[in-house]
Amino acid sequence: MSFLVLFEPEIPFNVGSLIRISACFSSKLAIIRPTGFVWDVSRMKRSAMDYLEQVDIVFYNSFDQFKTAHDGRIIGTAIGSGTAYQEFAFQPNDAILLGKESTGLPADIYSKLDNTVTIEIKARSLNLSTAGAILLAHASNVAI
Image (tube, rainbow, N blue to C red; front, side, top):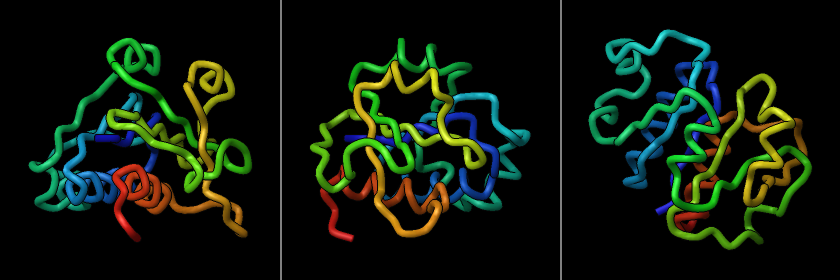
């Protein structure tokens, strides 16, 4: 099954929401460090609630460490470029890479990806956890 990868997330409540979303889809979650907050299980339970124990969360210290460990495609997200997510054929074990809340993915990461998808919207951007939910639902073939 496809899963979400968070690149240096900055907001703990977004991470908590994405933990809950991952639990709902029985999906693992990968987090590429550093995070913009101190990772503390008791603090994360505040936003992830009891879903924290239901998700296999794997941490990596860099994108390259994650890329070496992952045996599958890495699908990045981009605002305004890439294939529209609803036209993209996700495959099992695709890693859906979400960028930082403030800046997205760094430019040098895009050349290391297998593909990029975008969510075509009229506003500037979606909340990270909303975008992750849309993409994971689509990759999982769940009607939303």
